[in-house]
Image 1 (cartoon, rainbow, N blue to C red):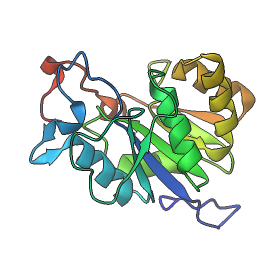
Image 2: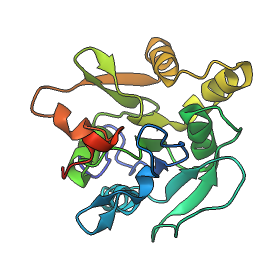
Image 3: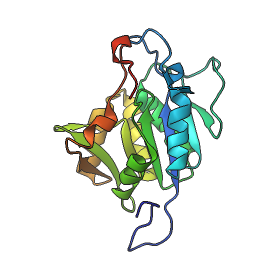
Length: 204
């Protein structure tokens, strides 16, 4: 199952990845993509982990317009937010539009503990047409989730009407049946530690 196979449908699921790197990093005070985990930039680590887990291609979500201020990671493809100043939902829409895949794995840039085995577990919790969103202490984690290609229409509609909360979009997906929850226990949840402020920046 770790290879994205479903027992009732043995065709391998096509999996793409998206690292959301289009935020302003205001609380951190510097670009989170360039923070280091050992000798590796965080953006390189995220792309590598997704690729090793089987995602192909791996997109790096960048802000609407402008130019990239740093070299893109190897094995990655740049996609730009579909609209300016619309938060992560605009990046997710751009990723879903670009992905010729059954599922898009979406991860915020500031998750230094993500690793390929955990990402494979996330893939394992998907099923045909239905993605998976982790739940930690009752809260959805929609920026570390797997979304089916069919979620694009819903995301576009929310973006067009200015309903930009990814939490609300994920809850809509659960109600509509294209998203399942994956409750994480205490041993699994630390993988979703995030770096928001300078004091959070410690080795994972």
